[in-house]
Length: 528
Image (cartoon, rainbow, N blue to C red; front, side, top):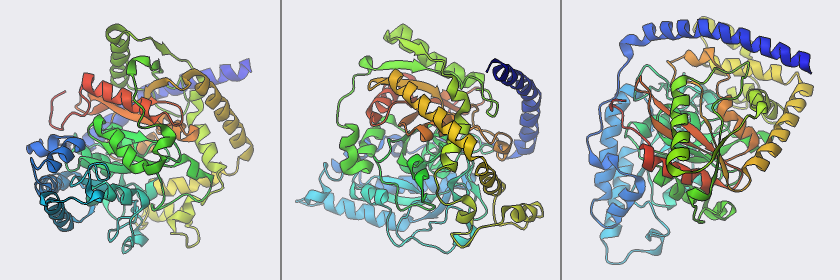
């Protein structure tokens, strides 16, 4: 055991040294390539686009503003910033405006039906965006797969139905990575989405279009799904809040592609928004009757929460080091909690975190679900990913390189069942350790990602960096991504707030608290 530990330490030292040399070179090359296309979106001018969804709902209901005015303001903003960011797959602007007028007619009436009451429709008249992977009746649902270009959803996904029932008005569906399995939202059908803080940078994936729309002021809230970090990474790269709920809390049906095996245990659906105060009301709407499982109505006293922190994974051989500015923002919060708030924050050293990618990959490999090459063919046989790689090299493939690579790599992972079982055993032991540490009243502060938003295509060089988020899909823990301002480059930084299953209210309460102290989302165009 000592020999293997020594060998791992040597490997880690060698890879670290190589990283110190190669990372600056890679970053320099990409900065030169994208220098001319780097810009920040136009600052938000309409004050209606600078209010939380709950406040907009209150103003609409009290008739301080009309739903039509709010929806129109967001449509105008979406049209403006989409020119630079390309997050819209398809819009329903005219339908949304008509639905807003209908809301105004209802609220101007003498008698308001019970289904439109504040209790049953808490977000009545407020616009929302929808991740294109979710079914929104009459709208595309392709997940960037070229052969699905003509498909339109015939009904709403369950979570979309709940959002509509709560009074939210969908205005558009937003871009994703191909088949929702990469952390840059780009595909051959709908193109590449660009970060509103710097259009040369990625928006994350797979819910990257949502993250971009919300951060840029084109939407106030949205819905994402997360099987390896697809809510939290886009929320991090775009500087907004995102919550990966406890398993079973929010229905994940009605999205494409949908896992068919035990990999469904890793998939969750949850809210994304600019303001932490919208997280809990949105989660209640999305979870419906299941909200009781997580006691979402139970009040939380942040002073009674036990805090823990980790500033990195302890030294994975496959994942990048956490950048200093990301660690600095987390340390600032820890120091504030200790010195100003007066709570104890314990730093943990959990060595099993080093194997986050291996544990996530093992859980996926042993799930028994549909393999990725089958998804790439839309269930019509399997795509030959090796042939697709050759076609990609000559510009003839309809698939992205990350999708092709995943299709090839998944087959290799299936060849090591013994190693996969061992890694799942490590995961189960880590689960037991974390549950004992966090209990029912603890949260862990942990980096969302080791790097601020990379340049377009740069993630190809760091394919396993999603392990920082993927670990908690494998563990099935609820997690809230919390923004903490901007880096010296003007790019968002932040961290994850992790807690144990069905304690979602704890991580959300901490996010709301930190938003009040550190400001939360920073509008694009603001100097760091």
